Length: 121
Image 1: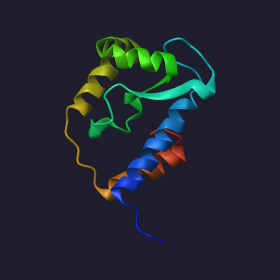
Image 2: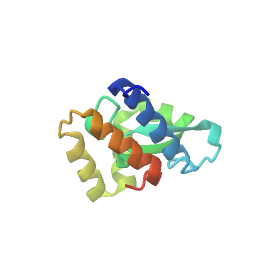
Image 3: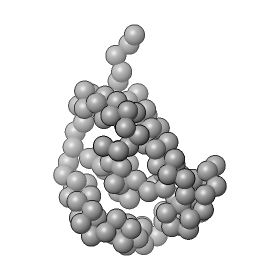
Image 4: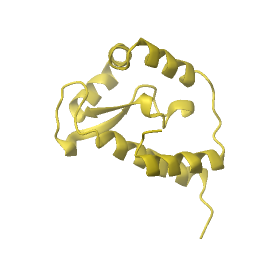
């Protein structure tokens, strides 16, 4: 069995986070529950490695609301602040602005934790 790479773990973490978020079952903006249209939206985009797989950073949105927020990122931030509440939004913002260079073992631990708990870390 080959040792996983950062890129393979990144892919696996992205997939499991998307599954966890979509399993919430409805769009948090419009309440649509059409599972095939649900998507995982990052409040802070995936390039923010410190919160890429942070469940606080991930919203379940339908494709339409996701597209809307991609065109209106400031509105997404305002929505996120309201949806999460000020304390959680502030916590997320602090985590996002704290640089993180993931080590392979940390990524493996996170993946195994998400797999075991279904995102309730």
